[in-house]
Amino acid sequence: MFGGIEAGGTKFVCCVADENMNIIDRTTIETKTPDYTMTKVFEFFRDKEIKSLGVAIFGPIDIDRESETYGKILNTPKLAWANYNIYEALKNELNVPIMIDTDVNGAALCEYYEGHGKGRKSVLYITIGTGIGAGFVVGGETRNGLCHPEMGHVLVQSKEKDFEGVCPFHKSCLEGMASGPSILGRYGVKGTELAKDHEVWDFIGDYVGQALMAYTLILAPDIILIGGGVSRQEHLFTKFRESFKKHMNGYLSHGRYTKEVDDYIKYPKHGQDAGLIGSLYLAKMA
Amino acid sequence: MFGGIEAGGTKFVCCVADENMNIIDRTTIETKTPDYTMTKVFEFFRDKEIKSLGVAIFGPIDIDRESETYGKILNTPKLAWANYNIYEALKNELNVPIMIDTDVNGAALCEYYEGHGKGRKSVLYITIGTGIGAGFVVGGETRNGLCHPEMGHVLVQSKEKDFEGVCPFHKSCLEGMASGPSILGRYGVKGTELAKDHEVWDFIGDYVGQALMAYTLILAPDIILIGGGVSRQEHLFTKFRESFKKHMNGYLSHGRYTKEVDDYIKYPKHGQDAGLIGSLYLAKMA
Image (cartoon, rainbow over all chains, first blue to last red; front, side, top):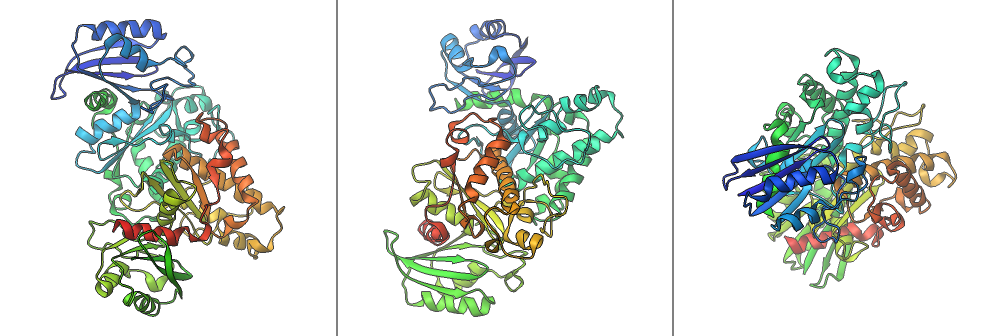
């Protein structure tokens, strides 16, 4: 039995799966303080006899397995969790091999092994919601450097004169201009309350396309999957693709980046479950 | 004996080296037509008894070893070379194992093995000259996706109202705003003719810093080395680092991206020779 946790800012989803990755039990726990949430996590796993555990979690977090602070959550706006070492806590309680990576790296793994990335060399998974982040998998392994990527913070060219972006670090980076809070920051309402022909979708489509261009020029991935709350608005995908094509302007001649763009930029096969399923692949690797 | 070629838009440099990578003979050939230049390349290598050959060449070029058109130069402004297959030509003439990669990937290899990247996990090498490109090496291997990276074309945020950038594809991408031709495009003179306190260096420093931010957020490399004609202006490095720090705004807490930025962003140890030496490492891999 493998154990998996998808640890998000709103909820922790815990599950156990058999050797064939069939999920046989799961529970959802509210993300409050580590004390509250983790006590319930421990309870869920205590009698499950898992042989390893995977954790796909929000960042920033230390995921360098050679580091002394492996599994330590870094400087995060979720203040109760800053400096909390989730690896240490789980290891002490469950004493099984544990693999920790970001939620988006987990989702990329899921789509690589059993989603739209199956049979492809690499998968870039992006989430657009409260925050924007991305994970990259090549040949079944997540690609991290000195730290995990923070691709949601690349700068974008803005056309908006009256809005400077909501990112507290960079203002007009992608997260500052295309996340859920950016919509709230512009209009005081959530995206779900705005019509499909509202101008904001053109802005967001444009900025996301610019970022997809940067990721493509730097990583040249096989496929880009975009999940997260904002991307549930299906009509956005046409805008993502149009913006990507417009900005690339045919510069890279590979078919994936030109005539196959409809298949290159997609909604994930496993939708909102990709991170949880990915945590099981992390457990398998642990 | 290993053979190496650094193939650039102005000149081809060919060399042979012993097992310890000591260059024992070299020649420089003008880049004219394939017919003119390659005839001289063949002549140089004909009696050298090399056991393998590495080629570090300008892009775009097909470097997928499984492709039927491996070594074919793609759509390039150097028109005489478009669609020329340099792998095929060299293979037919010299009949030794040949490894082809981009000039910047070659330079990154050189710096990884015997330059400022020695002992580090990864090296990002950027050239800023007539064009802007980058190569990325991790664990001794160049990182390419479906095609080699074209990192010089990431978009940047411009502050200039009277200049829209010279890139024929993207106008205000990094290459459009910070390459040698961008200086010529603004003022009608070359960068070497402008004083160190000219405003253009602030612009270029700013744009390069923005791109370094994107590369860092996406790849999280151990070190960034910047070569090429424009970067020979040493005073620019202070501006690159200041711009990087200003735009990052402390977002990634890793020491390499904060307090060690002077060592993170540097001029390559092997300067203008990095590509040629890198071609020998390609030969070794072939």
